[in-house]
Each structure stands twice: as C-alpha cells, then as structure tokens.
Length: 248
Image 1 (cartoon, one colour):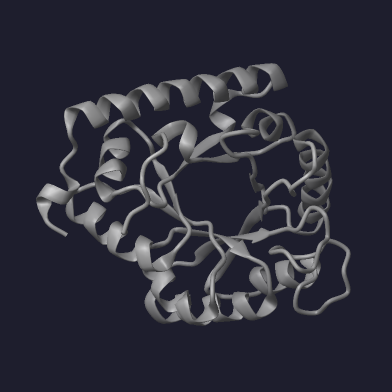
Image 2: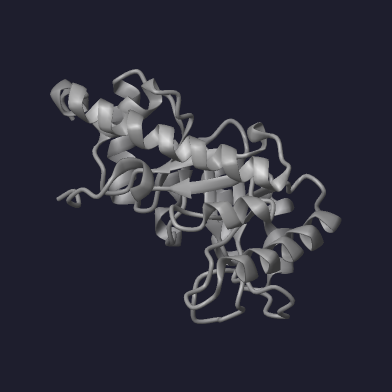
C-alpha cells in the first residue's frame, strides 16, 4: 500500500473527529448514568470496510483500539497502518476459521471471537510459533444458547462448544491468555435483557477465572445498555466512521 493510500484528507479527518466526539460523549454519559468511572470503558473502533487511512486518522485522534472481522482485509491494513507509523491495539472480532489462525496471530493483539476448543487449540499452536508473548483471547458467548449461531454455549455439556470447556482450553494454553468474554445481543432481544444475561454469565466465569475481567459488548445502537450492564469494551463502527462504500 502506498503512502498516498494512508494519507488522511483534512475533510475526512474532520468527519472522524466529529464522530469520535459524539461517541465519546455517549460513552461518558452512559458511564455517568451507570455510576461508573469513564476510564473503565474502552472504545474499539470497528474499521472493517474502511481504509487504512481512516485507522491512521483515528490513531492520530487518540483512538487506541481498532477492530477488524476479516483476515484478508485486516492483515494488509494492519501492515499499512504500521508502515504509516500508527500503532493501535488490533482486535480480531469476526468469525475465525482455524486455517487463518497463523495469519491473525501475527498482527492481532486480541482475538474476541473464540467459541470452540478446536479454535482455541489452533490459535495456541499458531501463537506459540510466531509470538513472543501470549495472545489475549475473549471467548465469544451465545447469549440465547442457539447452537446454530456463533458463540460458546453457557451451561452446555458440549465438549467443543460449551462455555466452560472453551474457557478452560484458553486458560490452559501456553500461548493464550483468557481475558474475558465477548457477545452480541441476539436478534429480537431487547438490549437490556441480553446484556443482563451476559452480565450473569460473566460473573460466573470470573468466579472460576478471576483474571477474565474484560467484557466486550455493545455496538453503535446499544452501547448505553451494554455499559449499564458492565461492558468494559464497546465496538463501534457506523456511529464513529459514518456510512461508506465497502472496500473492493
């Protein structure tokens, strides 16, 4: 990627600055309403389909954490951003195939979407081969327990997809660190209902794994509810970056 492709146009920087100010204000208001310190919540800017130049601009505006959900887009984007001198913390937040693990662990600081023992094992092997420190992992949890959707299943006996086996596999892996949970509110559920249930699951996990304190929940439309129920990270795309054509 050339330098011109990571150069930030002044008008685009202004758009991003305005979006960031609005999102930061929403987070601050939600923290205040929940009686929580503002610094307990980290904004993860979801930059899928947006160019590397936007990531460089956001980093310049003080955004420290960036989320991507497709390796084929994220890998070259992370390289371009690094070449431009920006060093955000990269979160992989999408469904991850095991054959992509070796690529993802090269640039991701956090993988938020581990939902099976097999995927945990693949990431552990990849991380051990190419990294000099453990990879932070969030177990993606299915709030509604639907086995046909992504996410480990709370209370399930399934040795591959049950939340307890997946969490234990991550916690026991030399190349991984169990940092906490990630979830998306199920379609058709009110956010408060979904995130209240997630808070219960997170509390149970912390009883067994006290260091698993991260709770990634809430997006552009429901971040206030997520913060009210204990989210430590919110994943925001359109409210921050606006609606733009997908990358080709």
